[in-house]
Image (tube, rainbow, N blue to C red; front, side, top):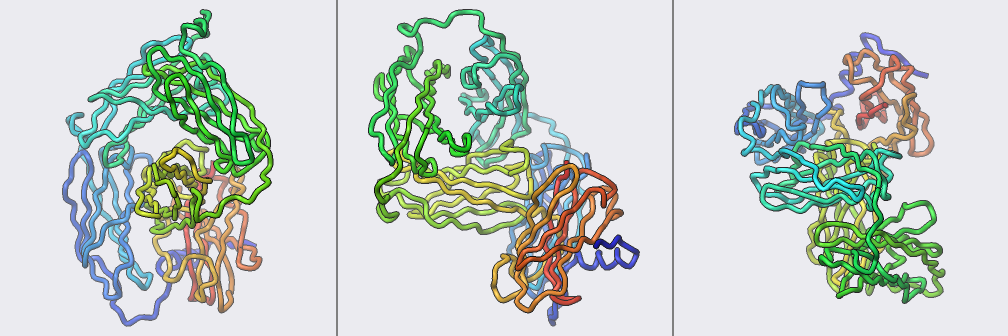
Length: 562
């Protein structure tokens, strides 16, 4: 059963979106003053002074440009010091746009109440490319059936961290997407894109350019479309050409196998990669291993622990890159790994990843912390992360900081298009011998920040003795609607569980309160677009668990309906 809004219902909805009722003698939190400083074409700083007798929980500063609605909204979390808070809003987090910006300031106290104020800021257009993080002219050279070279002029006043050039063919979507890392020299980044890395296909290619500075800020993206011609010549003979020779497999057991390849690279070897996966379930366990090179031999031990410990059919491809960035004709091997007949070593003496925890979760991102065990020492810990929306179009390989037996990295949502919703982070632990620990991963739901009210209470959705709710998650998303599911904890029982839903367009003109079906500590409901004027785009979802008419917990999110 669903109730459409009335005037009284709208008022009730407006009240519910605010803070939960709290019995307290403390004066309400209030904003005393705000100011804008450091205003330039690169961004601006928002400063706020506040009064909060109950103490401050957090200060959020959602920001967007007036152009194109809230398509670039990012919920920034400000730094708090005493009774002041501050945050520098970089235009790079908002598509590098100039013009009218809007920043709202939410100051939350420890009782769940909040004060709100807004600022309008005009960001001037950049008058000098030399002072901003940017990508300049992009050129294509060395175009042939073998591939092409992409060269870009870059400007990074704070220094370049890396330049990535993800590339794919237009045929069959992004099934051959490869994230190439470009070489950087001064103000120029370049990479030779070999067609052999993309199934040897000819035709339409797309290359995007991602420029990261030392502060891990991302320049406005650029991209090129290239048409690779069909091959019209016979490749050179292996005896005098850049090539991979004999490939052998040794040390085969349930633990894995060693791949050894003879290589010939007259201009020198840059690197040899050995991507490997099991034939079961497609490439769901694909790992790009980097081989060791000694003279004319490349070798890598493929541990089955890096591939979910599976036995059976494995495939390993061999990618040989020379100093000019060119790729040799590929070779591959198929290997059958036998089932294990022995107990694996205990974690105390083996390379492994232990407990993984998520902290500092907000609309701005989250921190991943993992316990690690590497008896031969840690080489590096990588935490590739992407949002579940649109495949891996926002995949970033973050490198974690390591201190003793702990690795940690803060994943900023601004590095992933500022998106909310379902995120995936995998953890790759490499030791000093080049071996990879069994992978671990976490799924995290980043809140949209579309819920300014929030509630006081523990939002972990577990049995904590207090009324609490986990962040909602969405399934069955399509152009027809979506399903909202929550987990909650109500030790004293609950009166009802409801979800208020409306589209971002035209305010709350299509607000509907959906009653959720409850089973145990899980509640769910399906939201059809037919109940919301058949509109598509951003839907705002606020889920409520009511213990009484006046005591409740609330969590919100934004859902993009295609």
